[in-house]
Length: 295
Image 1 (cartoon, rainbow, N blue to C red):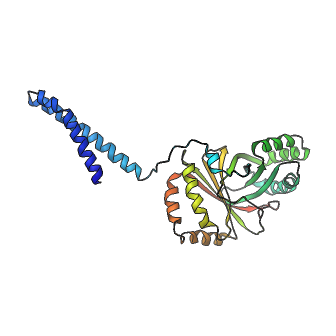
Image 2: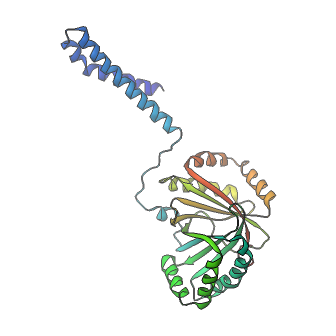
Image 3: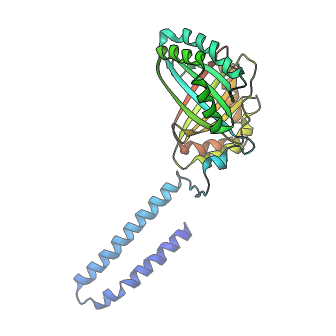
C-alpha cells in the first residue's frame, strides 16, 4: 500500500506540474477553478481505475500467454490416444431394451482387432440426468484411428442394425472428442462392484493451462483409495470442458474419500484457486453396464 500511495503521489505531482503553466497564465479565479476541476477529475478517474484493478486482482489470476496449443502442453506425449464420450438420453420406457442392445453389440467392436478402438466404460446415470447412458471410447492412433473406425463401421451390418434400433429409443444424443491429461493414469479395466462419478467442469476460456498446473499437483491427494480413473479435456464439442472420472465402492465411500482429501496440506489451496476458473460444473453418479470393462 505504501508503494501504491507513493506512486499515486508522484503521478499527482506530474499532473500538477503539467498544469502549472495553466495556473500561471490564468488571470482570473475562473481559470484557476477550471484547472483545479480538471486535476480533481483526473485524480478521481485514476483512483477509481486503480481501485477497480486492485479489486479484480483478488478474483482473477493472471494467466501467462502461451505460444503452443493446450493439447500439446497438457496431453500425454508418449502416446496418441483420442477419446470419445457419448451422452445418450433414452426414452424411459426403452432404457432396459437399450441396455440389452448395447451389451450385445458394443463388446464385439471392442474385441475386434480390426478396429483400433477400445470401450473404456459404459454406464447408466444413477444420480444426475435420468434415463441417460454414457459411453467412453479410446482410439489408439488419434484422429486417423477414429476415421478408420468410422469408415469400417459404415460396412458393419450388425452395427448399422444396432444404430437403426438405437435411434428408435433415443430422445437426444451428443458427443465430445477428448484428450487425457498427462498427469492422470490411463483408464484400465477394474473389477467391481463400483459406482462411478463423472465430474464435468466448464472452464472460463483461457484458463485450461492454469487448471492443469494445479491439478498436476492435486492428483496425488486423490490416489489413496485408487479412486482416480481418468482425467480428460475437450478438443471437439463443448470447448474448455474438463471431465474427471472417479470410482468408489459406494456413496458413503465417496463421502469419506472426498472428506479425507481436506486433511492433506495443499488441497485447500487447489480448491481455492481452481473454483474461480469454473463457469459451470455437473456431477453424475453412474452404474456400469454388464459390458463395461470398468466395473
